[in-house]
Length: 219
Image 1 (cartoon, rainbow, N blue to C red):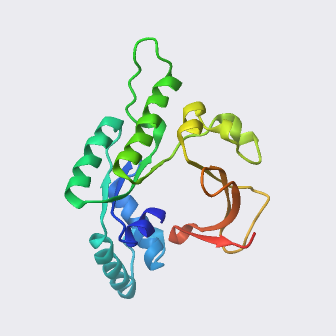
Image 2 (cartoon, rainbow, N blue to C red):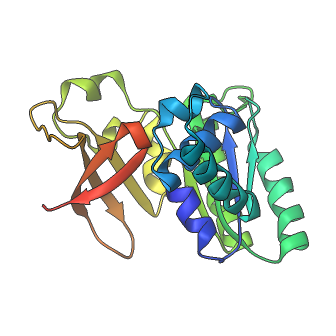
């Protein structure tokens, strides 16, 4: 949803590296959020004529947006850098590079280097790419198993967290508190744990899974 909305702002191309979902799965989710058509009906190709017309219209709009999806696993930071340079030359501006997710990237370890140090090289390189390309670099990360026992995640809960916490300008957590319910969907807590320019903040979101859409709730 965020990627789709950024692409609609006409502020540059969007490069999405999805290592777990393929391109069609991502587009089905985007179409559901944009059109309001039930995601499972789209996925199972069980649509009425009216829904088909809605999907066609939104699909045409989606295909016009500057979203480029690579859905192969094991992408490396060097590959991302090379692709970003190519798209920068070709299109002039990149709005965002998004990677899902950091820990399953191809991250070779040098001799004597720890896994955390190897990940640190990647996060440092990602920050440099963002500066060179003058764009946002959004990288999803795993959290530690210990975080599952906590009500609210903290920066230390980022898996192999030292370099991620140091290099990131913004760190955002999304999590679900089972004690908070809502008849309209699943309540998701959004915690901005680090933000260089906007400050720490918290929000409540409502996730409507049947249309793959987040909406902001009153605090």
